[in-house]
Amino acid sequence: MATKNSTSLPRVELLHVFVPAGLSGRLAKYGQHSFTHDTSAIESGDPAAEISLTMPLSAQSYSTTPMLPVFQTFLPEGFLKQRIQERFAKVLRVDDMALLALSGGNAIGRLRVNRERTPPTMTPKPQKAKPRLTRP
Image 1 (cartoon, rainbow, N blue to C red):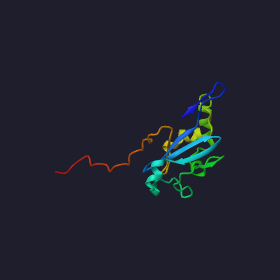
Image 2: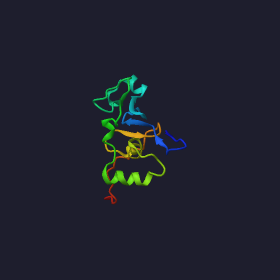
Image 3: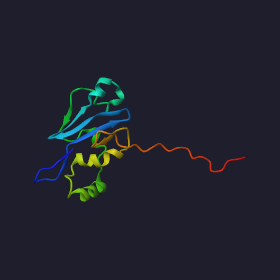
Image 4: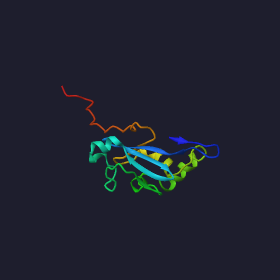
């Protein structure tokens, strides 16, 4: 979800976080970064829905002023970060949430981040090549 007022560029305020088991929770930024587990993940009690060992399933939100460490690992750095900031500076407020929204759907690892409540498409696992010629 992005908001825009008359004096600033739109900013990303809400991202949905997915694990292989499905939706794990929401990451929001309203002053602080805050992660809240989805109620279905809490009710299931499945440890696979946890996004980090340091953030077990809980009804309470995990909040901090800088980006939560589990999400910092997905942020681009150096040259790539600079290029993204240059390309999107005119249309989007490029902060940590925007960088995560742009790169979190293609991250390496078990977490995926998407602005929509639907999980980002996962690349299919490569399949064994079938032989082109068959023996009689």
